[in-house]
Amino acid sequence: MISFERVALPVLRMFGAAVLAVVTLVIVCVPGKAHADDALAREYFRRGVDLYDKKQYAPALESFRAAYAEKPSPGIKQNIALSLKGLDRPVEAATAFDEALDEGADTLKPSTRAAMEAELAELSKIVATVRLKIISAADKQPLENVVVTVDKTPISGAALRRPVRLEPGIHIFTAQSPGLANPPEKKLSILAGSPVDATFELGAAAGVLTVKPNVVDAIVRIDGKEVGRGAWSGSLAAGTHRVTAAAPGYQTTTVDVVVSSGTSVEYAMTLLLPGGPPPIYDRPPVKKPPPELKLRYFVPMVAYDGESLRLATILAEPAGGRSRPFTGGTFGVRVGYRVSRVFALELYGDVGQLKESYAISALAAESSTKVVHWQLTPLVRFATSGSFRFTVASGVGVHGVSVNANINTGSGTAAMSKIVKASGVSASWLTDLGMQLDAGPLFIEAVGFFDMHGVGSVREEVSNERLLLSSPATRIGIRAGLGINF
Image (cartoon, rainbow, N blue to C red; front, side, top):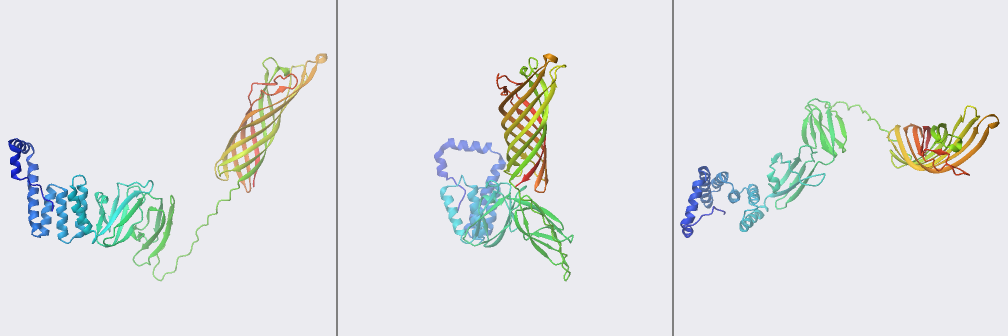
């Protein structure tokens, strides 16, 4: 048994007058209330020891508890545990030994700790022991702000650091924490001498269940636990839950409801009168599965487009060139592969012609310049979901331009005519933005686009002079297409 330390008188004499002086100074300086508490605790403790030695365990327990209230210490808690053991209260005794070991984790002597552990080992043979672990489902780390109950009795937070001691038998455990989905309760059958480990994961995948009985004051139970009367709604861990609705005078209704993570389930429960007809079966609406996503598609397209080109002096323009507007049409095709419903990879190709007719001077005959262009460009396309969707695509490819100019200058006898031809290939950047609309297995597309491409490589075949200045040029237009999925 642990008792207060007593300092023998012969030892005090060995310290001499100096030690006595220090003790006197401490007694004078410490407030009187603390000495009174200490003295009272010692008195209670001595009385408890005397009663325990006489095997009067009940009054000894009261004396030790009074001493502990005045001056808590793991030594006094050990004597409380021994008194409880003497009263044949093994569950409380084992719990008190656990508390004493916890409180004296850093101060108990090895021999004292060993004695307590030996007592616990002996008690563990006749009591049930549960080691609880409360963790977060997200990161598997221990949780602090948790309320745990055993047979509807809450356990203190400090008690969760130690084994839970119980009478052998069946016990029901619950755990909850603010803001986290409650896990299902655990019903454990625990035998004496066979410790059980129980882990609760809080914050697991959860959904919302709403129960609507047809009887206003019907009692609603979820997994055997009463949760309310009448309509009830709450968050539950994902999985199957047994829902029961009962009311006086009505037949009890029980169903198993599956709650999925991140979803809301609403369940109407019909309670019938004894002998009443069954409810009319109302078949729930059948949701059509989304149409199968076809991965490949082909889109023929036509476009109306135009661009402004600066014609060089070789085309009889003044020094520095002159900008002239060109318009025309384009035919193109696009093949694509859908990586997902919103993302696709494509290869785009088109060929078209732009033309402009104009007079070099007021007296000259009309001149004309034709620009034939083509391009081949890989694209990355994004689209929103649904049958009507917005789409945007962009990519970099190669662009070819061929120029055929019929130039007329002067008038009368001074009239001159010449034909100038040139071609070249450069890089281009193509971007489009628009919308698509599903029409059965097809889809209709309308987009606006711009195509920025180089013109510096377009040079006359003989003189190697540039025909088009101010590179790069930008072609813009609108395009319509009919997509075919396959």
